[in-house]
Length: 118
Image (cartoon, rainbow, N blue to C red; front, side, top):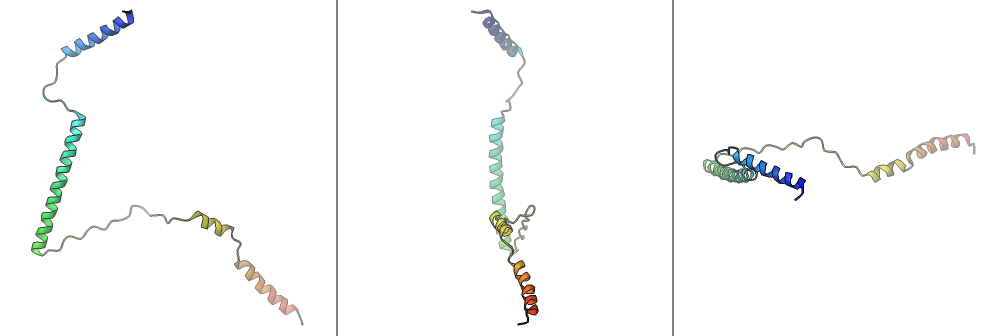
């Protein structure tokens, strides 16, 4: 056995000896995985209980003839952006302006008609 391996085994043995001599806490130890399972189970139980209570409230309201409480309106979070098609905006920018030549031809033809004596 090599010297480094001997010291490694000795260190592991001393760690085990110290851990064995240390006092252990009493009672059940907390396990995070077990705690998460317990919380999920409790959450499901509470959801079922909530559904039963809501059903009882609805039955009582129907029996008494009371109108159910109106549902809260849902408000959108933030302003929704209207989607813009990039191809249409680019086509509108690239398309030659048709209105300008029509406006320019109107006064020019009228001036040409006035200046033409025939």
